[in-house]
Every structure is written in structure tokens, then in C-alpha cells.
Image (tube, rainbow, N blue to C red; front, top):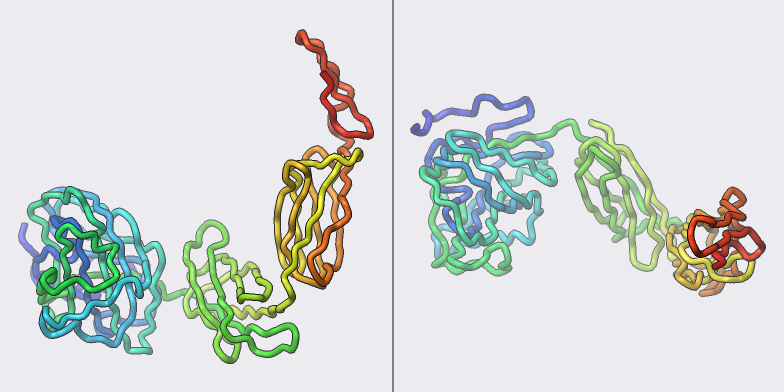
Length: 402
């Protein structure tokens, strides 16, 4: 089957898909299935990309003689560059280590004329108000036995200027390099891959201001990290507060997240948030530079013997969780002169909780004495085997007597 006639778009797209380029020039680009390792980068313009949105998938179109599955990585970034150069001798790549890694996995290619749709591991936000171009980089880690497929054509769009940068590994794993490949490894490509973007436009956003507890001054350089909280969300994001203490994450998919504020020598603040479509959530934070201290201690039973495996959960100004060792000892990381609550739990003992203000420097708590939980089995005598044993309840705790 030959290539279809030139069209301005593709049929069968859903409401969120946008045809970026739709030429029908046949080429091994963009995936170069018969090569062992490749880097291919293409520049797309605002006129081609269209409106603002979170790009969640890419679709490429081709005609393949047989099916195969190959591992690729996909990176994206914005740029003001219009071309990679004018000749192979002066072409300059975009180092993919400086781009956002959006996909790292296997791509399944079907036989025949099909769209190959790649759901990105992370969405990419494009803001049309900036007028930036996008560079899409596709990297194939080295493959010992590349598939032999004929035909293996993907649709490309003819363009002016060197808007595709293409390098072949020739036995080198290009996914591991950090310096530009030599010019002899490059091939000239007069096209860019024809592609469809799927965009989400009903996203939300997050903004806020971080201040210091000591004087309420605006706090620059705080890292704000967003991670998924529960099923249904997968997006991650990071921002840094500016000189006014402000941060802004312009596009987040609706769902539940954890937002964490961190800065060296200051406490970490973490809270749960819910992002709603087409709304901006404000989440401020206050950080304090209290001195970090260590609180040590021990958990014992009524006879003073250490209890192993006790769970200790410290909450308050900062949070920390640990478990007692074989001798019942534990160490907690905290901050000086702050309010805390310590929860102590073990399945065989009655749970306890204690509240306190931490001291100015490292110190040791008094021993925490646990009482055996009253509902545990007591005074049980074994008569089934040749060896008698008795499980007794006494002031010492649980003891196995042989």
C-alpha cells in the first residue's frame, strides 16, 4: 500500500488530539528501526504546535511490513532555536540531558498502516504565550539485534532549513553520551516527523509564597516538589521560590498530590493537596531554621528488658518514623525546642503516646516502659508434644518456659 495523498490532518482523532504536521514523505525517521542506536531531534514551531496545553501523548504514522517492539526514550524542551545549523559541519545538537525525560519504555509497532501512539510517562506543558519552539528528542539505547522490517516507512513533512538533527551510533550507545556526536555520525534529513499531539487543556495550577518563621521574611531558593498521592495521578513537578518567596506550577493534571517544601538547614513541610480543573490552588508555607538534634532512648518491658520491633512515630514540627533495635534502643531526628508527639506501638503491648517540647541539643529520653496488652493469651500449657511449655502472664511480660 502506498502513502496516502497529502492531507491537512488525520482522521480518527479524539477531541484532545491536534495534528501538528501531516506530510506524507516516506522515511525511516523518526524511529530508524533498522539502526542499533540513534538520536533524532526535530524542531516544531508555535504555528504547528497550536494552543497552550499539557501534551500527554504523541502519535506517529507509518507503514510497516511486520510488527516489532523496541525500547526508546523521549525528551522534550522549549527553545528559541529555529534550526540546528545550516550544514552537517556546523550543526549543533540539543543535549538531551538538559531536556525533560517524558518517556522511557518499550514502543509497540504494529504491522501495516497504523498510528503508533505513545502515552507519555509525564506530560509536557506548552505555553503558547511565550512563542517558543519545541524540540522533541527520540533516543534509542543500543540494540544488539535491530529488527529487519520491510517496508519500514514513517510519514514526514518537508520543511525549510535543518530542523532535524540525526546521529547514528555505529556500535556506540548514544543514550549514554553527554557530548555531541562527531559530524561523520550525522545524516542530513530535510524533513521533520509528522506527528499528532494529545493535549489536556482542563488542567489546574498551584502557587504560593514561602516565608521564614523567625521574622516572616520572604524565602528565596526553597524547592517545591509535587508527587502523586494515590491512584489516578502520575504527574510530578518541581519549582523553586524566587526573590519574593513565590513559586508557580502552571499546569497540573487534576487529582491528589503531596507538596513538599525543602531547604537546607530548615525543617521540611509536607501537605496533601487536591488540584481541580481550571482552578489555581494557593498553598503557602512557613519554614524554620531550628537546630537539628538527635533524640535517643529505649523501650523496655516491666522487668527492664529492651523490646525489639516497637514502632515509634514522631509528629509535630517535623515528622520521623523508626523502629527499636534488638536491644530496644532507638534514635529520632528532630529540631530543637519544638513541640512534638511521640506514638509508641507494638502488637503485644499497650500503645502509648507522649507529648513534649524538644530540648536545645541532643539528649536522651527516660526509658519508655510498655505494659503487656491484657487481651493477649495467658497461662496456656502445651500438652500435645513430648516437651511441655507454658505461656505465663506475670510482671516480667511474656516468657516461654521450657
